[in-house]
Image 1: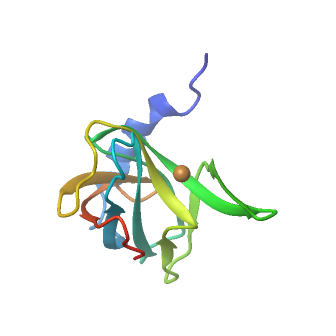
Image 2: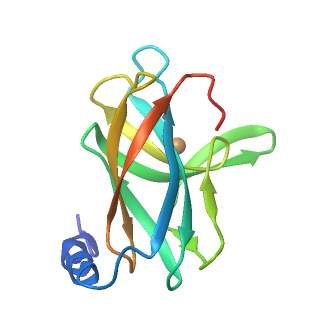
Length: 144
Ligand SMILES: [Cu+2]
């Protein structure tokens, strides 16, 4: 197996972190409470890029084995989702991650998400330094 990009990523993120304050604004990070003992969950938020054009490339959190950037789409009446490599951020244009659209899939949850809980989620970008936000778990019925 080959990993062409990931070994370089920490170095690039470190170099990017040496610059100005975070040019990316994150609003309303939230997740839905788990139904039963589900091992997956999803986190949602709104990203506004206030700097140069960038890309959200991934995320990580200590509460799950991994966090993947996913896109939901309607495939002839069936809702499906698939991993995407990055999400384009255009300066001044908020991008909303929400149920039925883009989301950060939390794979291998260490414990079910309970309403009222919070957890850290670190977002990675192509240019901006990584940014850690606090995600609030909202009730199962929460739509936004
Ligand atoms: Cu997903």
